[in-house]
Length: 439
Image (cartoon, rainbow, N blue to C red):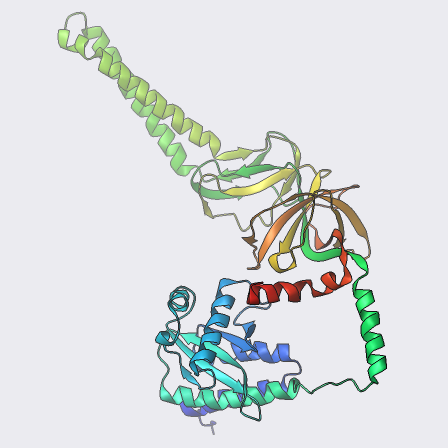
């Protein structure tokens, strides 16, 4: 006999029980937070979810590392603070846009989905210690709200089991505590060199960027990554079918214009009308010749050649083959393997005062025990979004000795000026306090 096929209600219950099991089976708060914002997405069809603990975003849907300065993170934290002030922080249910200020409503419209649901997380005393912001395009029905409320109780229980927040108290005599506090204060006054860690990559120095010379489709990529190239070597070949046809048509059109001009020149001795049209026909011949030359030039550009010797720096040839590109789009870079520099992406939260010539130490992921020394040359004034979605300053450093192979990645340690150990340790908390208090 065949087993009975579960209906939709049974599948819904099974999925819900699976979510509760995954929450209680989590071994760390990081694993639990990732489960809370991702695993329930197939059941409730939300576009994104944000986990807020103690007023700070701890996890986001599809994001492994939360960037504290990201616009969406700032919007969620600001909206949660307004829910606290309005008394809605401890009540599960859809979020009313009118309960937020105008700035939050504008951010909501551009950063989040129209229908948002706030699911508070409470401890055993009923105090709210966090919550989940769930947003999707469709409104939340009553059955889903009831199911979410029960799921919130499960999440709260699982979180408190992993992070109970037990009090810690010093039980030493007062004289000992004062002695330890004095020694700690003296240690905090010891000057040390400030340093930060940031991801870095070895990139070409003074490399030649090879860009698409025309709008077209890449037919062949004739070089491989890190391949040595010579001047004049064909690097990329574009699909030239339409360009050849265009050049042939332009050549034939020029022949017709020249024949017409020649015929009118011969008739000009006996026909005044033909004589008056010579200037127009001559200009038309020049126009067609210019069009023919332009078509030939485009056809010649269909083969991109190297202008200097070096190695071809790019990721993958298959990614470009058959892809339409626009004029000026970057295809690859030709670089001298003996000339390389270090490109560093310093997160905004880790930024310290760095002067040109500051010491930089690079530890490659492929060789973490070997240190490569470099000196800082340039630092960007404006932060930009990195491919990882973080705000970071771009820094360029010059290697003191022979550079590593182009394309290697690692971690760079940047050394700044000397400062008391207290500033080194409390720099981030002080920055956060100043942003909060405004002093």
